[in-house]
Amino acid sequence: MTEAIRALELDPLSLLNNLIVGTIFLSVGEYDLMLTQGRNLIELEPRFFGGYWLIGHEYWIKGRFEQAISEFEKVISLGATPFFTGSVGHLYGLMGERDKAQDALDELLRLSARQYVQQFCIAMIYAGLGEMDRAFDWLEQSYEQRDGNLISLKQIAAIIQPGLLADPRLTDLARRIGLP
Image (cartoon, rainbow, N blue to C red; front, side, top):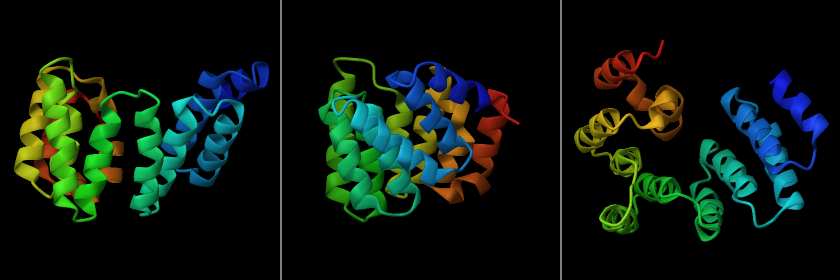
């Protein structure tokens, strides 16, 4: 955090430095600071996805799923990766809006016929729908593809589905990845 804040002091207009600081705030549980950082990013550049991403995560963590979806849809409209379609699908699943979650899942599966889509994104939607066996099938595929999202598996699992942390399949997967 010290190094990131120093980088931001040296270049306060850097979108990347601002996003990194916000991401660190997310990682250490400083959600109010993350929200402030998101707002700062939008003020700096409203066409950059980072501010909406940070604000969306703050809403997600606080259980304000509709607002999180609204922010993530802004991220998607700015051309972000399929990861955010997975996030939106996951949140729809948690909200019980199965049809909308299925629409997001179908979109990712169609997209995967044309371009690379991280299997982790599909696993997120199944987790949101409560279909844990299918979620773990996709997480295994994600592991086989060496998906970089798995580095943050435990942190992401705690956010997307706290019950996942107690699942022995997650413990096994984390061990194989080499996570503590």
